Image (cartoon, rainbow, N blue to C red; front, side, top):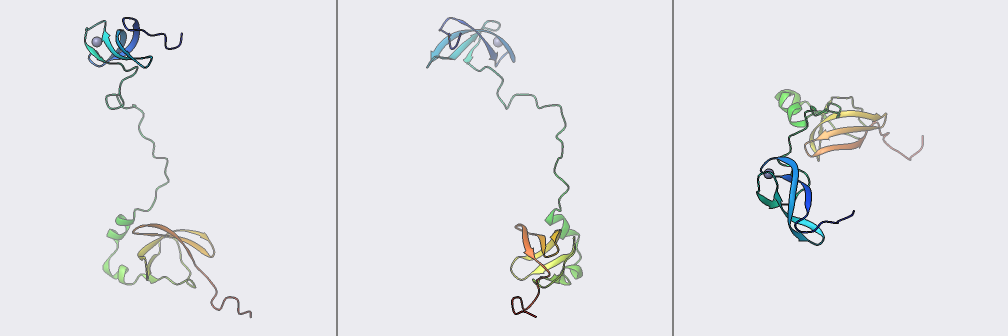
Length: 146
Ligand SMILES: [Zn+2]
């Protein structure tokens, strides 16, 4: 019984008026699928739909779980900083060493917050336009030998 629908036939469909899944009579078919149906209960004609549209669907009662780990909100973080903290922000240098939640000032990206220390030589810093991975503890004079 696949697509065995014909105009005048019976079909279970979502009634937009009754807001229930009810028996309907097929009024018009398009490309082997019901297009227009008539509700057997309220006699209203409407486009066929098997289920309520997303918009009208009652939202799931389950509260949305916040799976995401609490991230630093850049704007919030910046707004909590005092002017002196901002002006004293550590200048970012590849030779520098940074700690989590440290405020840094990058010559190109501006004020950032160290959101996590990935490795001893790699930190993730949150800037206004998003997090960036940056180098830290880079030895100066690299490759010159000792
Ligand atoms: Zn109806």
